[in-house]
Length: 320
Image (cartoon, rainbow, N blue to C red; front, side, top):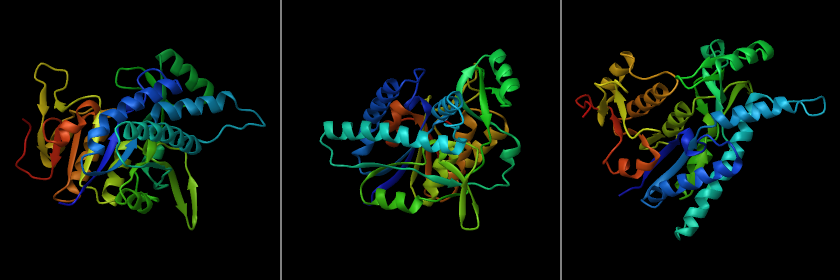
């Protein structure tokens, strides 16, 4: 039986849950590595992607606070690269420690990844991607007036800076990522959605944006010919009518029915919607591909079919 290739898209709670210190984030990643241990030893070829919203936002703030003639602030794409290297370093350490503690003979590597976007993407005219910490409405409006930034209210949790979030059209390093994973290594790639770049002839230029991590994970999963896209978030299942008396858990669902739920407005744009849209795109890209959405703590059980929301192309499936 051939090995299955899986792209695991880690949510923000896998790295940071309130405490932004390096030590706290490294501790969170050690827990994440332990949760992924069974998957890493269960015959899958694994590529791990992750978000960077809080981290890149904080790096931007630090750059701005320290800006001077001698130390000019770095642009957003470069800050994204910094966050990729930082989180990749922490994650490599955490996974390597867990592998060695449990006597598993695997290696792990991070690939700093550039993701091509279109300069004409309409997202550049309508910034929507939240980055950085939460602010009160009063603080956000003050910063908007003082620094010419754009802030929006984020799913009832407070106000955050928003930046353009263009769709990924290509991943420049995908062949190298694939070669590493097919050689038996665990690969961390496309961190924070990748570094957004545009092509101008033979020249590649970074651009001020943050690509949605779930769309980037979906694009990578297609390019490396993965079998499963595993999107890990804060909930064990996707639900419709979430938080209402008639809430219903979705266990197994076709892309066709899930698209109907999207059109009915069941999924908030700032949180679950991009995951659902990425899930549909991947499942529809080949008949035998599947997307699973679940929590980090139930990831292994979800791969065994015991929990999570499983999205496939078949038309007859509905929620259970």
